[in-house]
Length: 365
Image (cartoon, rainbow, N blue to C red; front, side):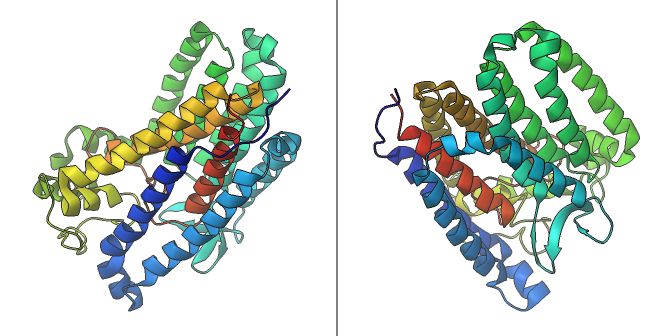
């Protein structure tokens, strides 16, 4: 019998709200120059971020108080809707192209990104499926291939947009759920080899990805082309030193660093707030992931444990990829920093997901 509901994990909630506050401040600092040049209003991105942060907090409060078992009941419907939206994006006249990727639905500057919904939809469905089929997960064909096939289908549709960053987060979080559910490491290792071959195929199919790989290895080979973003990111991080240049004093946001308010916002944080500021942000993420893992371990049932694992995995993988790109450890790919980067659907969905995680923590043993 599941225990009565208690208070949510206050450490998790506090670290979430602090990250969100840092994000609102840094979005304004990083985007003021760009917003004034493009829209004649230096507060443009700040207003949007504040609006979506408010919507996200409202959604987080709702999911924090709505018992997480309701997601299990509607998991199949949620996944079907996510697939429909994901396919709709690819239809000319319906999907909107932004940043070279057809991954948006909407009108004008407002829109939703169905791939963001798919991440959470897949986590909910896999948690339900594997909690009910846990006894067969050690079998390759009957237990492991069906969920992996579903993940592969979603990843393939996302890659048609294309959006490698979101696809990588989806696969990473899904594999973590599958492994936690009891899949054999040997089976996953074999499939990892197949995944590497598939990744090579993706690179061959799109030459621009190969340029990103070579730019990652030596960005100074093409400083004005494929290596430009990586170089400008490092130019931002380097001068930051220990304490930074000061809030609002970034030089790279003056049209040097592309996407300073989204994909490369951590570069601006490091430049303006230095090693101390960057470390503080990483500490908050560490607290969030730690308390999330604690919630997964102490969840009252298998579904709650897998659901919490997937949400934590989604956050952790996205943070690792984003900061890895910013500091030059990974090739450049378009992915935001959770709770920090400017965003609409990504920010709202992340807060909604954390609300679910907080609700699970209310039932922890």
